[in-house]
Length: 259
Figure 1 (cartoon, rainbow, N blue to C red):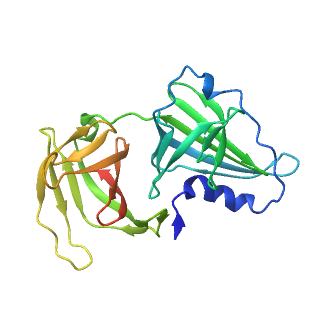
Figure 2: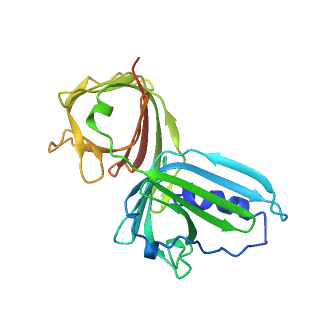
């Protein structure tokens, strides 16, 4: 079992726990109180870099990861984080030291200095003890129809059951088949047999991009309507995320473009 706040906390706590010495978190020169840049929007996650320093200031270790997902800062002082299999929601504010604070006045509080902010770049940094975590984001771009109108072959699915404030162990599933998004706004879904269960019949229907949220919606306004977060789409891969509130499953589906 792992808390779904793991994204911001676990990496930090695991490394900070090795050191009892804490450095003061310094304020940043960039204060969002005075920003003329619209930062209250969706930011795509680029990298998370964790640096552990010696007492001399030299870098002891460095780790960089490249998660899928995005970080959405809402104007009502709430945020949404979708990263791999761990969705997180909470509140934010800006304190007197101009730090960007997640979950203020709770035991999950996290304070970040704003290192860089522009229309298309956001960099946040948290420093505790000898450990610094730098999170880099780019302005999220809503996928257009043309970028999705291909046949996407199944690669694998990461599936994680969830409960209240909890995401359980992720299971990796692999099933043959493909998902084809056609230019006439129809789709075709073909799935192979799985775990001894015969293949389901081919499915077809309609698809499109819905606002707000840039959601990919299948069979809109029908009883089987469902929607997916498009977390990543490029020239050779597609990643979509769905929260199944009936089965209580977070599902991250990976596809590769058919060659």
